[in-house]
Amino acid sequence: MNVSQLITDATRSVAILILAAIFVRIVGRMFKKLESTQGSQRRHRVTLYRLLASALRYSVDFIVVVMIMGQFHVQTASLIAGAGIIGLAISFGAQGLVQDVVTGIFLLYEDQFGVGERVTFPSLNLSGEVQEVGIRITRLIGPTGDTIVIPNRLILEVENLSRVAEALIVTVVVSVIAQEDPQNVRMALEEAVAAAQSQASEITLHGITGFGNACTMWTITASASPDSRAIVDQWIRQCVLDSFHRHAIQLA
Image (cartoon, rainbow, N blue to C red; front, side):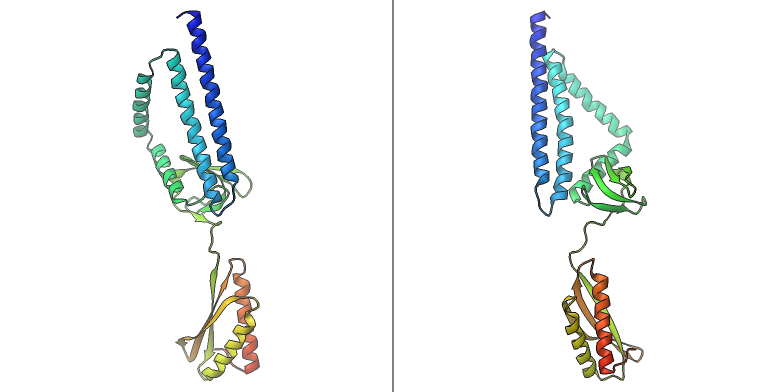
């Protein structure tokens, strides 16, 4: 190989490196821009885009290496075939790695958790904020700020603390002695429900829903957010007690 040909091959190789770097940077910025968009699925998109960016970087690096070796007249066909054989051998020899990858794919596909969400893994007795969800590992930021790296195959259970129902149903069961007049009880409970409207939404009196030992059971339900559930429950009970006190109705 003469000097002129060597310079030409080197120039082409540098051009390949520059173009690959520009391509990776442009796509990376595009993913960053997509991550910054608002929406209810933002965390899922952040997780997916970071995974795609990582996979793209590794794929481009491999292609660049093959192309540069091709510029210097290295037989890349045997290299690619060899890489496939080596990969197959590794897959048989590293069962844990294969399990990590398979589990990671299902974690991402099922969207069990995403970057920025708070999760608990009961089987591992670990909890924290998700920093990264990868094909092989998951990174958490622990309660003390430490970084926890978890192989995906060890994640058997997930409690996602960042995904809770937007509205919960608060149920209050009121037991009244059987001797009380049902009409008076209903009137008192309707007054309690009307008074409780200030703190609860969609509050409903369902009437008699059961019988106990010398008592009748009346049920009241209301909608509440996860943060206000306890407050709504306490307020309904307070309104019921106040109304029963005015009407001289005895609880069982």
